[in-house]
Every structure is written in C-alpha cells, then in structure tokens.
Length: 320
Image 1 (cartoon, helix red, strand yellow):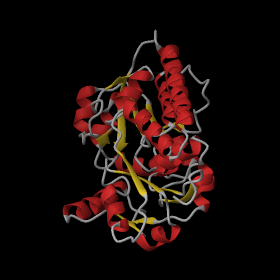
Image 2 (cartoon, helix red, strand yellow):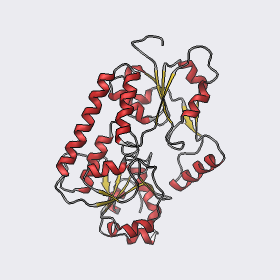
Image 3 (cartoon, rainbow, N blue to C red):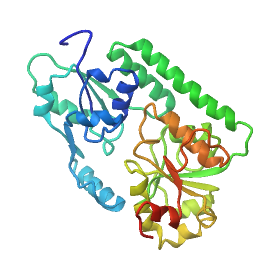
Image 4 (tube, rainbow, N blue to C red):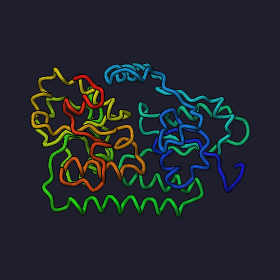
C-alpha cells in the first residue's frame, strides 16, 4: 500500500461506490465502473469498465444481447486492464453474485493476473439478504480502515428500516407484485421480499435470499396483486415509463385488477431496490409510501416514484 492511512480504492460496482462514500471515504476513491453514478461527484472519476452490448435498446433487446454473450461463455462487461494498472490501486471492490449486473470477480482477476510486483486486495461481494449487505458494509469499512464508521452506518440503516416497519405495523398489508424487468418479465428476489415485508406488504413473487425469478404475466393474473411496482434494474423513471409501452397490447396485463384500478407504480430502479447499499433504506420508504397511500412523510412520491397512467407518461415526454 502506498500510504497505510490512504489506500487507493477502485470500485467496480455502483453499490460499493455508494458504500465507500457513505462511509466518508470518498477521498480514497480513484476510479469507478461505467455504472457508478452516485453520489454525482463520482462521475468526475475515470471509468475503467464498459459493457460489451448496446445499452440503448429496449428491455427485450438488452435481454437478448446479454443472453447471447452469456450463452457464448463471454463476459458481459470489459475491464480496461491498462488503465486499472496505471491507477495502481490498493483495494478493488467488485462482485461475484451476478454476471449480467456488473463486472465480475473473474473479469477483475483476469485484468490483474499479469501485474508484476504488489497486487491489490480484491474484495468481492455476494449479497443475497439484508444481513449479507450489512456484513458487506462492515467488510468494506474494515478494508478501508474505518470499521467503527461501518458499524455506525449499519446501525443507522437498521434503525431507519425498523422505524418504517413500526409505522406500518398495525396496518392492513396489501399484496405486491414487484417487477424488476419488463420484457421478459422478472420479479425480485434476494433482499426484495424482506424489504417489501418491512414496508408493510405481502410479497407475491421471489423468495428471500434467492435469485430473482422469471415470471409470466399469467402468474401475475393468478396472484391478482393489490398493487404492482415496476422498477427495472438500471432504469430511471422516464426510461421505465417509455418501456411500459410494450405492455399496451398485452391483454393479460390490461386485465390485471391493479392495472384496471390504477394501482401500478413506476420507481427509479437505477437508484433504488437493485443496488445492495445504503439507499435500500430509502427503497423501503418508497415501498411503504406506495403500499400505504396516506404515508408521505418520506417525500419520495412524484420524485423517486410515480403512479403510472397516461397523464404521468405524457408529463415525462412519453407518448402512450
């Protein structure tokens, strides 16, 4: 390490970038992935990864492109090994949970395997539950020499989520279909069932700690959810509203009770839900506001999420 007090950190997943900065260690951060965008100042840092597929397409086109790469045994993302070596990091943060979500541990190991001399510490995370996420925050904090700050951050997150749960504790619990990808449809697993329960809802798809499951719209029809939340991985609200157009001619979708009665919500999946980091607290608050319409103390309505209808879509410049 160049300076035991100031390790040089490269974060190759958006969630660990958020963790580094939530720990107050942003001054150690020297490079990021192409997906790291929070806090906004990190976008001034060099990006040392890039996707191997066109990211501007529809959800179906993106899904097809990623499937083709995976089926060929190819990496979905690429690490700029030369740029990474030039930065000479002490700690590299990555993941080995999902090969289609971000740069993988294998990608990073390939990038550094030929380095001569000192090798960076590679910390790879694989969170599936909130307990895993809290443990990962502690691991990152320990690697950066601020274990006490990590413990404080975890305690704060746990307390804030517990406060949301106490607000909704004695309320009726609506059923929720959480949609993590639109075409083809996927629901949310991992920590999402836990988060939905904490927010006062009954999760219909996906199991606690398990991978996110593919579903069919007929499954949603059979479950007949009270509320539907659409929050695709990597999509902000305007992008998701545009993608919702693919459901216009879907008779099963149009027949869902939640759709007919106007209880479909679109949230920012790029910022929330899909990133296993500090903003899962805000994600819990968002779900609570969606499930319980009289709760608005957290201030997320019409900012981090919107009710889906033609008027809202039009306001976001989306033709329906």
